[in-house]
Length: 277
Ligand code: C2E
Ligand code: CA
Ligand code: CA
Image (cartoon, rainbow, N blue to C red):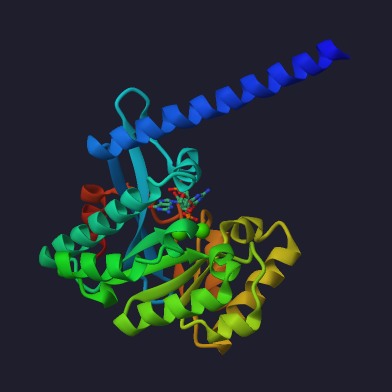
């Protein structure tokens, strides 16, 4: 028994060490990445369903690792969130996306918005509004050319606080979108009170269209509900023409997904936009 306890203790200890070491290793890697400019933004276009033009792009973070190549955010965003690094990385993303959009506006890629994802921790930072104001002022981007995406779960975790922050952002003219809609629990009362412009239906529902009647019913209901509140609807993860046709038929406003384009490096996005215009 003593041995078992001893072993249990050892096991616990070493697993803590492995987790702790991994965290430290990752944290120092991410810190270095920030210092050495290893982060990049890719841009994925959003397409207006009926008019067919590009309405803007979602900025998606990538880590160009010196040995491993391009690493997607699913492999490090959650880790960044657990450290104080989310603040500088989040600010870097916002600044970079705003700078890029200003450059594109100057180059004639006008009439567009750039969408930036805000993590839960960023959203609850007391100085979020200050950071947004400062970056808009510094880069000269108009608030109306910036869209912020907040996940449904983040928005609903403290709905009262969310209402205050969204109201302040809306007053500045920033476009607001609730991301990954349908995956969390939303109080409809709050959805109506939040001053949001759009909701983005989670890709899991889009991918089930044509396979699962429930998904079709949910997507249709979300579109109707949002429209009844004058909220625009974006569908993410659209990969097939059948999915697009369903969305067109049911009045979805914008579409994003591999069917139109993968997320692209900035130069490739500008080229795509040029072809599209
Ligand atoms: P998200 O905000 O839901 O972003 C959409 C994800 O779906 C992106 O993955 C995108 O590449 C992928 N995607 C786009 N079209 C399709 C499609 O047709 N099919 C499929 N299967 N996937 C598609 P990505 O770039 O790996 O980003 C993953 C998540 O990481 C994002 O999910 C977002 O939550 C987070 N993320 C990305 N960039 C940032 C950032 O700058 N800040 C924060 N806080 N989170 C970020
Ligand atoms: Ca998003
Ligand atoms: Ca999403």
